[in-house]
Image (cartoon, rainbow, N blue to C red; front, side, top):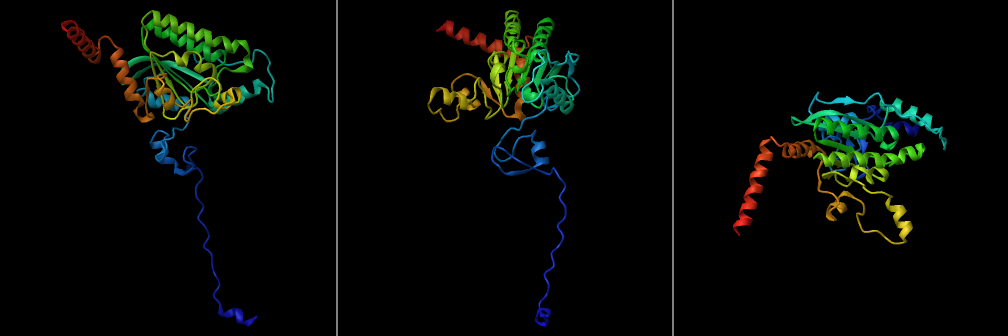
Length: 301
């Protein structure tokens, strides 16, 4: 039809392909964030301050002085003692987690320095079966506590165990709650100093044992912390829960934890606490001097 020739055809430019992985959606604010900016902020959202889950190697790099971490008990490896099968065989899930993470278990422990202060440091990796506590996880934590007791060093552990105790191992998993708690009791009797850092989420058997026994308990912002989840509690008591229930802010208000620290400030906070705990440090000396001054003032009154 000749009348169409009078119109110019619309030409569409071919869209340039965008490299994959440049953007990521924040689960906190649901906005798209530039991945590089989030990673520069140690995987913290620049808009809503949501703290993304991070791996054990990333946690070690953030908290410990560069090159100071020396892993211990790396030879311990999770196994399938019960031959447990649910939707998938536990053995297959273990092998998959080991392939994805490059770890033998959800827990990594060793000796390290934080702002120059020596300590025994450990953390869980949520990529490995949600950081759940199996028999090897509990054994490594108990051995790390015993190592801190032997070396007379503070113990710092960062928990992120959304899976709690690993039911695939039955009672062998549950007994780790008692084992780690008993090791911490012996550590405390010998004057040990334990800093527990809670991240999102720390639930179940981990929260009901070692994670809640710190001399100082620190939490990241908006972390979900507790034993049973809020939906389970709501269905059990047949009542609505307070706003923010089981978040780190709620637990700070109720006195269950001591402080909430943003991830970029965590290393400096740990370093300051470790200096206070070091009897020979200037910070400890200043603390003793202030305490002596307070006691002297009270006696004079």
